[in-house]
Length: 373
Image (cartoon, rainbow, N blue to C red; front, side, top):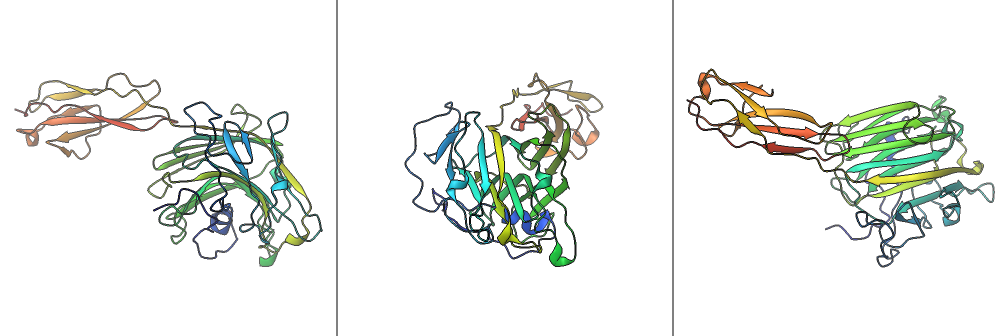
């Protein structure tokens, strides 16, 4: 049984090579969660009733409550985080995360996480002011990721816009550039393509980036745009589908700025660095208008039956599957179905499945016909 508050449990994964974002990098990005006992009682609602802001934390921002990380641990190489490295929202509503190094040899990271858990399917977005291509090679910008360390079989983590050079690669005789990444982890015991999937892409000199994640059943759509909002140049769009896409659990939303100790860098002596988060939003999936379909035509061999799906939400993509006495007919996936001798004596019905980005996919079944004559 899952605990109602999440404890600082590191990801359940073996050590991996830091060669790429698709190995240790996304795994290490998983910020640790609030220790047991630090989440106060539930606050008054500060967002519209449709949105649960979560218990009171360090500050409220964009309709949700957030906790500044004050406890130590992974992924920071020296396990040092400082709540003072997270600024409260300023007059513009911006939140700044800073990497400090007050002694010159003991850097401290910054992290915030939502006090609400269990966001689930929907559309996430954030706007960030930072030329990520100029990150120091040891610094990792963990930009908007969902994470639940207790989700079975290992944990679930979806990284919308992580960026780093992962220490630079000098330890391997290589020179790694800063890259950005879209991806997820679900089961660290399985190899890439089975328990995790990640895509990296080059950085640009763009000072402001907007990122969007659409999380649907068995499907993730990642988008990174130049500038504020979604009207700028689309720098990268990644679609990941399949059974290994994480399913909703008790994930919280994290942002963090930290230092990796791998790759041949000099983590002790990184210079102070900061990132400004200008915006965050979450919208749960919409509800499609999904009427019950009907079947037109006479159920007799040689005749063609037609599916009438009814009027769905504008922009919905419809797919069809025909059934013979309750069993799916192989290859019968068009809007019409021509009855053959094999159908005689059976009843026929059709399933209509509607999908639209940002909405929950729904299926509707028609009533069965009379037995085919």
